[in-house]
Length: 443
Image 1 (tube, rainbow, N blue to C red):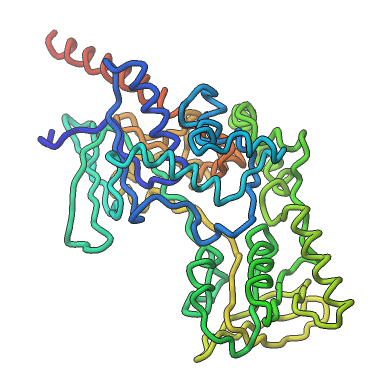
Image 2 (image 1 turned 90 degrees about the horizontal axis):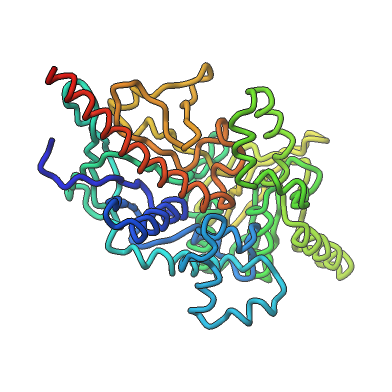
């Protein structure tokens, strides 16, 4: 094997998921220094950041603070949200709010606070561009992870690892035929782009989408640009409220992952369909009421800046010299018209990146189901052919096997513990197998 230092784990991406895993590994290492796991992470951003473009003032989390990076696994951890509050001297103040839901800005500060503890274990400003299997005696015993500096691709480094944790997050989805540009943005870039706008020629923004991000973008633009009209375009009749009732929220419990994983395929799909309204294309009820009051009050005042263009579909976007033109069609009447806009904001969701695009030759050893999806074991490890000893753990993109929480914060604390335990168990198992092969060779 190469003379490079061999890490037990290389994490690709350092968002909340791999940050939670770093904390779980650190907790194990503190308890069992003689069996420590060596972990390193690669992150393309220059510093830790989580949806910075949507850290809108006043926007709150949709998940309770107790579902932080550790509490559901270890309430005594020094990385809990409560410990963060205590260190920031805000514990009593937070309690007096009588709310389980911190602002997104505060929760991001908590994540940064945690990430700062692992600065020496993260290579920021670098992208993983290639994974090369290391084969010995016909078995893939490790991988070389090739990284490039975002600022200069010629700056290449190679890391050697026995396991991978793929936490590259989500990639923005744009409507078919629509390209991003100077005045056409995904909501991911809202706070990066909107404050940079100069004089508004059209005094109009068009926001496409019916989910939480869309509604938040509408509220933000309406509040920030008091002389501009904001047009909300969506195919529904109105925003739909998220189901956050106690019984429905059990779909986010750790034990729900066990139930889902063991269920027959038709039942899994049924559960996803029944509970999609807990997370997808839904909006917090308080925000819906706030937007409706705004629409009504503007109608009373005779100056309607907030326009809800319901049952309306975006059919195209044209880039113009001084903005963007949103082409829309009313589904009920068939009327087609254009909205000359200073910016078109697309709240059109995200998609998972297929990890096989990064795995190179190793992708051929990954097993798939009849639908062509990766087969993933309960410990979040991709199932592979028998001659692959490298563990490939997925931090997301596993809704088909692990359920709706796959890309959410709710079970990160528990999932990170499961992956950490799996790393340790497999290290022991592979060591025993190696000893058995060596003994058989001697005989």
